[in-house]
Length: 156
Image 1: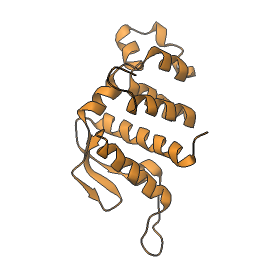
Image 2: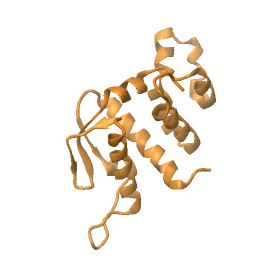
Image 3: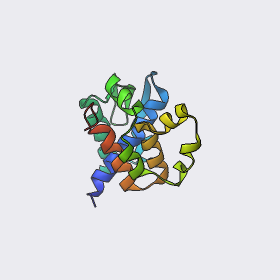
Image 4: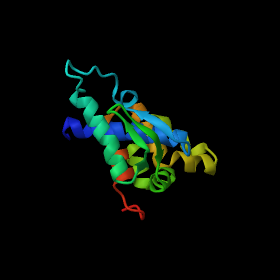
């Protein structure tokens, strides 16, 4: 079992990537509260550790080249964020069959009866990330995000 902050990072990254993929190629504002939930700053105006961890995850995704943005909106959001080319290609690419089998859920049972074009869509990394988020299982989410973010272009 990973540390809780690492599990939260994977979930935050997954939600952000799904939001940006759904808006691609439009630029959108990426709000921390939409990803990590509501936050009430303390009496000094400081955000919670959870809020700041999510904001840090978004900045990390940008620093590592998965997304671009124009500016930050205080510590509340990334202004005009968009997926990078590399992130879009990774998310759109078919995931390795072994990973698909490993992360398969009950919702994937009918995949074999679908046309090849739909089977390909359901084999993409973005589909794995979306279904992992829907499952609400941290193990599935972390595995899908790790496979998407931390594999090289040849799938290793």
